[in-house]
Length: 243
Image 1 (tube, one colour):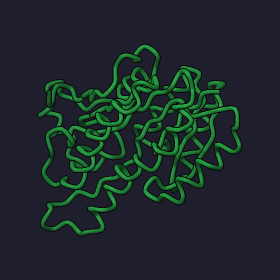
Image 2 (cartoon, one colour):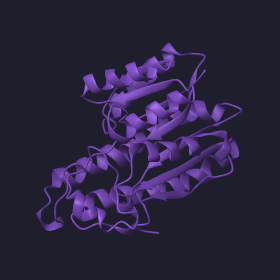
Image 3 (cartoon, rainbow, N blue to C red):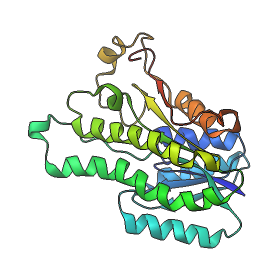
Image 4 (cartoon, rainbow, N blue to C red):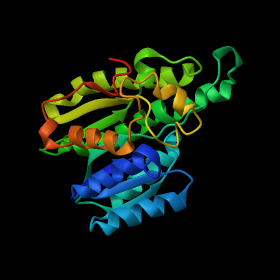
């Protein structure tokens, strides 16, 4: 059986992606690190659609936790494999660089960029062994494309994800594995709830923030067989804010 793993799947964009995958009948492994109640809610919503859902707790930035959790999952599913991977886990610790504590720099890079490496390298071998390969979508950001003041750590992380996406796509294309990135602009989520929404909306040509479901639709398309000839791409979804 083919499963999808969504890191940071308990809230925000990850939650929307899990629910959209369930609509397509794809069993979902929901990763979370601390908010078990939110993860259980997503699991229940996926199950309500008649689709299997499992919770997998680990910190993407902790290599020992990643390895232990994924190895345990593989042992429990000897005939199954993760065919769809969404590297979505991420945090923000915004500050001007000259005021940024060292721990905030490392925390942001560790969760998303190191996490992408830790998780993907564990999932790839089984994916590469399968005839039909698989699909990986990495969550980048507008910040990784143009940079945003007060987000040097976040922008560096997302720019790194974009570079990793382009390189990995070339490494695994011959194994029928696609690797793409999605770069959202301002989206209604936990990550943007502390922003000045009304002011920022005026900067967006569409005059609104995007919805998590719109990002989830794009992610699920890139994971699907309909996108098998799309790889190494960074697809923006930002209402025309930056092209």
